[in-house]
Image (cartoon, rainbow, N blue to C red; front, top):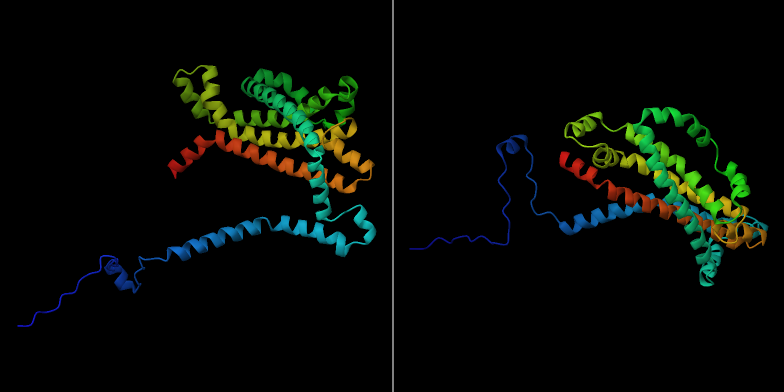
Length: 304
């Protein structure tokens, strides 16, 4: 009597699930349950790389135009006033090597950070009070509107005459320029807090201080940080202009002194440093905003 052979299943192979009756009626082929993970990861990485290249494409084109334009598109006399990018980078490396750039950068950062910090603390505190107390808003609003519509650079001669050309005048002009963006966004952030949250906090017996700490400030953080980011940019720009008028150190002094000494590559190196500094400050403020807004992301992910 002959025995029938038995078929053994390979434990390393995965059996595809049986197609459902609805799938059979529609004529849809069942999906394979063994995707090629290596190819999928490669395609995902390629898509991310493509998005990164496309997102930085305008910057790359600008840098290429800066490098090739003065050499091939402009006359030779123009290169004196618009040197190629590699010449500017060489000047930047030379300034870093002899320590000049570090000294100017440290002076500008000290002034900018001091004025910016004073403006943020004062503007947030005053903005909370103005937004919460209507009588204070009615009293201060006309004066605030007058100063808000007065450009900081228009008052630079006044600050210089009253406070001199030292550090106090530069820190004060930076604080003035950074104050109003933070103030206006703080007022707007407090006034857009959901009234239901305020009433719920009141019903729980929270005091005014606890209400500001637990409800109003967390809800107004995104709007406040919008003003803080605007103020960070304004503080750098106004400081550069102030350093061009009267200073012995700083990025603004480096730019104007290089221009007057006809060191054009050094001038462009200073301008490039200012651009990179503003970009770095913006990224840092965005990171701080995300840190203080983590609870919003958590709540949104749970709701989704």
